[in-house]
Length: 166
Length: 220
Image (spheres, each protein chain N blue to C red):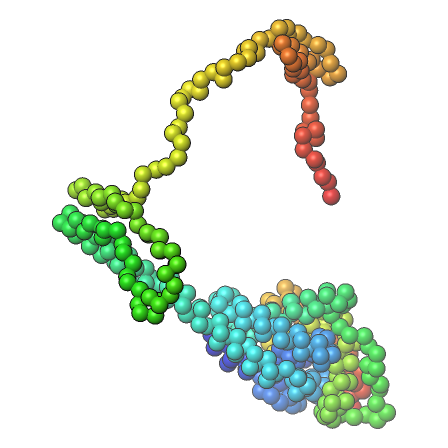
């Protein structure tokens, strides 16, 4: 296993997943570092028969986020302070994502989701896993995963102000 | 259209979006799939402040960890074990084969210190003579018998007081201890056995006891 190659291929995905979950950049850096440190330590025990590298890494990432939440004595998320404000106009979602402020609004909208939905949305949009892979990882049914994603995207669409106008 | 049907349609389009990198049009819900496309395009990794530093640190750690791992791998490999076993066998066979025909040479007589060099000779004559390192008359080294692998090292005779005779004899004065009387006495929780001798009274306590009397039982 070429760890440097894995790092280069998955750093962005893992960071984005963690950032969706915890929102704060500093915390995301800290947790992502722990994920790759743990992955490096466990690289000798990685068994391709049990799943691909991505599923293995995201399994570690999910545990790291849960540990972080437990260590902070709260749910693995940040408060909704300064979450987002509905835009006065009807901006397109693509425009919203331009720039740091827009990314913060996306994270705030994700933070408004319940923890399970945020976990699944983060897995889906950061890793591109299929619903079947997410179901296998989370222990939920594939259909249930699909419903959760559908409802979460619809809710984020409303929160971001892009509902029917996008 | 039910929510399940809408979700199924949406997830099919979402998978196509994530696979192809662009939203499928026409879509059954263009607003929703546009939002999904925007979420899929969101990349926060540029905010990371540790990416390069972490990569360098982990790569360094991997390289450092690689050296001992390589050493361990070499010294625990099957090839190394075979070579080590062969070397041990060769050493053993060599030792056994050469022992019977070669008796060890007798040790050198009492060692004499070399004559001091010129600068040392210039020291005052009052310096004491150096002590002798070896005994004056070393014991001869026995030649091992057939099949013996080791020769004993010459050593001086053991010193010290001779061992006493066994069994140890009487200490002399004094009378042997004689039990003058013995009786049982009812005591709290049992019976005591009282034995009297000429000079002392011994009481042997016999009663029911419990685990806690002997051991300090701590409970969290």
